[in-house]
Length: 274
Ligand code: SAM
View 1 (cartoon, rainbow, N blue to C red):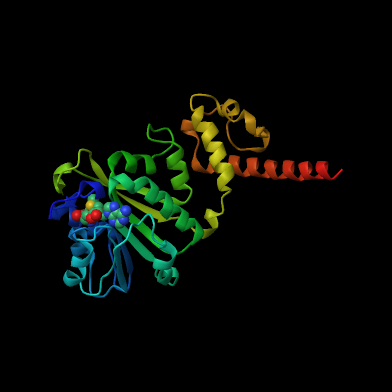
View 2 (spheres, rainbow, N blue to C red; view 1 turned 45 degrees about the vertical axis):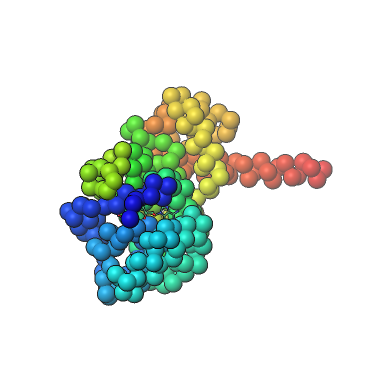
């Protein structure tokens, strides 16, 4: 079957890379696996084992989806668009221990919105996903897992890393796929943070990050002026630039900005009442 460009189909055909991915995922009996975009089953072949609790896959291509159950006994295949499916309903079984292991050699044209969707799912249903291993465009993997001070560090890195730990595992050259993509690829592991660490004022953080990275060459005190922060109460150097601010520092700023906003709201309401 001809690979379909509109579904971002680049099939893995490199046994050593497939084995490295399987080793990184390290499945155990009784695990729940959710594979996104199994295609012709290249990765499925290395991951599917008899003793898994469940192997659920979502594949949009109506010609490929029906072929998988004959090759992989017990596999459940949803012929759906992963961006539109009801993730919570599909993964409800994983609320119990052990949680879902999510894997996929993702179609690059949907990887950004898909990862944002999965991060929202992690926030809304803490404990439902144990970890996620994805093949991504190298540049995207670098941005998701970037550290402060590096070129790839930005709003996407912070928004991702407040929800999951992001580990850059290894690169995969274009020649490992059929047909070869025009870009380099990389494998990344995303592991949700402990549920307690996920209680973050998201809106406030989003506003802080927009201001900070819009003025990434400015000192923080200048870039974040509209927030009227009390810098003396923050353990953050106001002379830093956004490029060097850590996740914990951004969180502290977002928390203060949220608290100040709430107190302004209360005063505002009181003003209306008088
Ligand atoms: N896992 C296979 C492999 O490694 O050879 C295929 C990987 S290929 C890069 C991406 C797969 O995702 C294709 O099989 C494609 O049909 C499927 N796909 C594309 N868009 C999708 C969507 N919105 N929902 C579900 N599957 C999708």
